[in-house]
Length: 210
Image 1: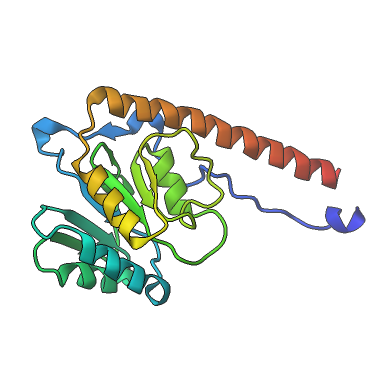
Image 2 (image 1 turned 60 degrees about the vertical axis):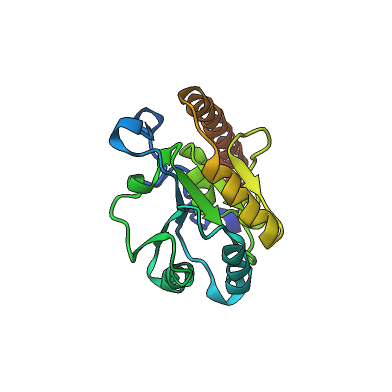
């Protein structure tokens, strides 16, 4: 116990990030502002070595004649923007850095994609996208450790075929105001659960130190 008392523990609260937007500030896609066309968002570090073959297959399965819109962010992800752009028929935007994460967090419009093939632990970009009420297309690794049972708008694919299918399904899905409001209420409840489990974990650590 003395050894424990000599250590300082820094524990990051799951919401200690500007990426998780306060519920009161979350915005729905606005039809009058032309925001209903859905966008696939690829952000965070997407490891080319381990995901290139998977994504190359996914992209080859997507319909060339569908007006897909992709946004790829991150200096290390230029390869992915180039890969998608090589198909030559879709709108692809690439940014080394997004100044305001909220710009790619419009409920009912933005679909965050996690094609992770390797890695362990919780993926922050998946957790934040989920908490922000966004639709997600992920592999099991991308959504690892995140309690998503019962949440709408979450699509989990194992194979490239499944991944491409889910991307197409969610792209064509029409999100009504009622549907988006339901997703927001679900996220409010999951935020409460995350906070509750965080407090339990903190209390356990404190009890070990005392």
